[in-house]
Length: 304
Ligand code: SF4
Ligand code: SF4
Image (tube, rainbow, N blue to C red; front, top):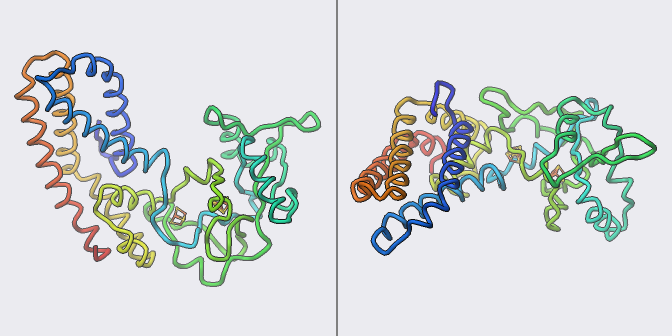
């Protein structure tokens, strides 16, 4: 349900709920499929496929479309905030390190869970199922952390960086250090080998999150994103977030979702299906037209 604090991330949460709602109905939908309701079936299926790939690219497998030389791969040595490594990746990383002639201990550090910052402690103690971090060593709960590189952050890099939330830039200064796997070109040497620690595949700064959503919606291209400087990208991301929170935006969104739910219910019950199909098609047409119009200021900022 849309509310006053609606924005890009709430939109994604909202659509995830819609997808879950439709997933629950899916066995019934399949059960009712017939030659007569083929058009409505494909409409429902296509709508869900589009939504699924959008949510996959924002929540489950986000790929940052920006080019900031990986500001999120720098960590504060003072606070000891680094990347915790899930145990299932340990062997792959050790092999990779050995193949490059290095020693695992130069890349990974074992640290007691008790010494971790609170936010990381809660993350490693409550992992996504299948991604355990904590191992016992000398009777203590320990976690492997990716080490940082002794190289200091490049001069000037801290100025042109993304936002972590509207109005708040990433906190980076010259004492931050790069993850040991970050190359001088701002690339991840692990990712290049197909090894992706889960934390690295789920984190996105605010700027990237908001613009990635518009990118996946088809409004922004690689050219419009990669060539721009972060003052503009940050401005565009804040604007996108503001537009998602507009009453007008929420109204068209809710209208289309309601029309979709009505269509699915009619498909299952068989009552008024033709009418609900037409209503949803019209709501969709208006929705895409208005959404594009409302989001136009973001494209203008980026010259897209
Ligand atoms: S998620 Fe943000 S900080 Fe990380 S690489 Fe992308 S733009 Fe940079
Ligand atoms: S492993 Fe790669 S993506 Fe993760 S922090 Fe290090 S350099 Fe960045």
